[in-house]
Length: 147
Ligand SMILES: [Zn+2]
Image (tube, rainbow, N blue to C red; front, side, top):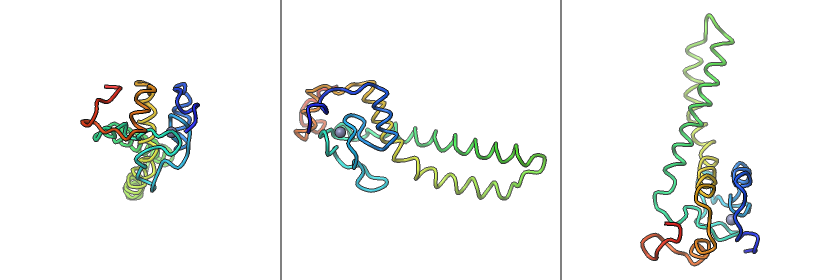
C-alpha cells in the first residue's frame, strides 16, 4: 500500500477509475472477485469497498435501474422512430426483454463502482478512516471515522 494511496484523488479521477472498474480511491484493478461480486477490500489501498456498512450498495441498485431504463428508452425510441409508422411491436417485446436482462447484469459492476466513487467524492476518505479499513473495522465494533 503506497503513500499515494493515502491521499484523496480529485473527483474526476474517482469517476474515471470507476468507469474502468478500478478502485476509485487508488486506481488499483482486480477489485471484483467475479463479474458481480466485489472483493471485501481493495488489494492496492486496503479500503473496504462497502466502507464497512452492510447496506452500502442500495444506491448502486438505483444507479443500475436508471442506467437500464435509459438504455431501454434510447433503444425503443430509436427503433420506433426508424420504423415509423409500423413499428415491429413483437420484435420490440423481445428486444426490451433481452436488453433488460443483459443491461441489469452488464451495468451492475459499473453501478457499484460508480456509487463508491460518488460516495468518496461526497465523503472523502480521511487517513483515519483508511487506517480503520486496513485494520478490518466493521460498523458496530469500533466507531467509524466518517460517521
Ligand atoms: Zn484502492
